[in-house]
Image 1 (cartoon, rainbow, N blue to C red):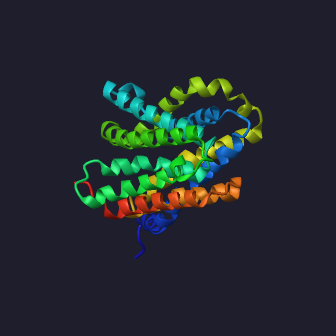
Image 2: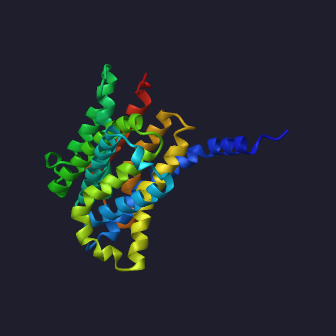
Image 3: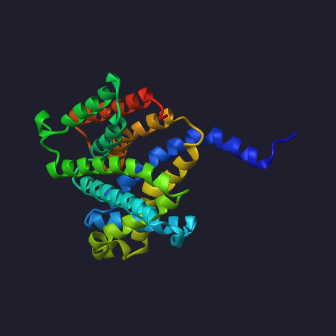
Length: 291
C-alpha cells in the first residue's frame, strides 16, 4: 500500500532538508557579493531600501495579513522588529562598501554569539564569544590590520548589535503575532524606516531593466529565499546542525568575495574569520536546548 501523497511529500522534504539548509546558508553570501558589485558607483543605502521594499511587497502578497485585527501590542512588536531589521541591513551595506565581504559577515556574527551568552552558566559558554572576540581583534589596527576601514568596522559592529536585537525581538514578535505575519510586517516597517535615506537616491537602480533584475536578485538571495528555505528545513533538522551550517557563512562569504569581487584577504583576516567560524560552531555544539 503506497503512502498518501501528503506523507510522501513530507518524507521527501525530510530527505532534502540538509540540502535546503546548505542552499539557505549559501545564498546570503552570494546576495552580499552581488549587492557590493551592483552598488559600485551608486548609493548603497538605496539598495538596502529597495531590498526591503521588494521583500516586503512579496511577503505581504503571500501572507496577506489582516491588518485591522492586530492589537497595539502586535503593531509595536512588528515595528520594533522592523527597526532592528532596518538598522541591521543598512549598516551591513554601509560596512560592505568599506570592508571585504568575508570580514563584514564575520564581525556581524558577534551578534548571535552575544545572544548565546545570555543566561550562560557554564565556563564553556563564555569560551566561544571570547574566541570570536579574539578573532575580531585580529582585524583591528592592534594586530597591524591598518588596511581595514575603521568606519567600516564600526558599521559592522553596529550590524552585530542589531542582529542580536533582531533575534531577541523575533522571539517576542513570534509570541505576539501568529504565523509569518510578524516577518511580513517587520519587512514593511523596515522599508518605511529606510525610505527617508534610500528612496530619494534610488533612481539609478530603477533606471533600467538590468539594474532592476539585479536588485530583485539581491532581495531574493539575501532575504526571501533563505528565509523560505530555513522555514522548511528548520522543522526537519536539529538546531545544532543549523547552527553549524550558519557558522560557515563567514567562510563562504570570504570565498565569494575572492572569486566574485577579487577581494584577497591577509593572513590575519583569514585567521580571524576561522576563529569566528570556530566559535560559532562550538557555540552550536555545546548550547543547551531551551526549556
